[in-house]
Amino acid sequence: MGKCLKHFDINDDGEKELIVGGYKISSGSGLSYGRSEVKLGTFSQDFDTLNIRTFATVRYREGDNYRSVSLYDLETAYNEENELFISIAYRDSLGTRIDLVSPSNLEIEQTRSLPSVPIKCMSVYSSVIENESDFLICINEDGWLYSIYTDELQIADIIEDFTANVIDLKIGNFDDDEDMEMAVLTRDAFIMYDLGRLSVPSSSQPPWTPETYAITAAYPNPFNNRARIEYTVPQPGRITLTLHDLTGRLVGRLSEGWQTAGTYDIILNADDLPGGAYLIRLEGARGDAVRVVQVVK
Image (cartoon, rainbow, N blue to C red; front, side):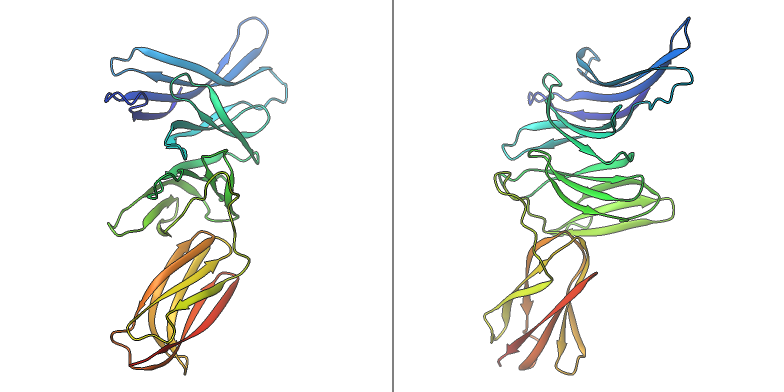
């Protein structure tokens, strides 16, 4: 049966091809046995077959304790060298796998095993920074979120119990600002997450994860009208960055939303602030940080 369909110019010739993924469970004759398999195929616009490949097969007898294979999702993504790959998530006889597949011949270039929990949905975050790879965001049936770099399929982040009852997710610039968003549909709600400025490091360097919530810099300080505030987030989650006076009164919200682990910066505009000392407070799910800045008028 068909499961996933993409329409993409895999040959970079100006014409889009069809990428079709599916799985089936079939029964044999005579002895009570069957077979389940996952397949991927590419087709021209005229529906001529370009390539077909079987990725997993399980044969079983009736009554055996077998585990059938299944296709979860597929996407198209680019690596650091701007090479196109097909990403396919499926279950084979050993557990859940993600493969990066060459679209020209459907050969497996990279593969990654994940815990044996079905993947409910997968989407691609495309970096806006030149020469940086895309990465995959997957949510499994238990509500865990994985972000995985397409270069060597390195796991960047794992968020346990991210959301329950997920149905689908999509990533895009839905509100036309400079940041990307992730739209998640569950059985109970539709939720929009702000991904912030995600930066994918080179595959030659392991992803660097900060150890603590920290406001690492505020410069210049003291300042007259504008200062650059830099801060670190040690784990994915919702953060707030706020400005307070010395009595603790909230003056303004500088940043708020879901962010991955990493280093961020933001410009603090003090044109409408009177001179004096202020507190910048960073708050996350498992920690916080405070830094004093001085506005000079």
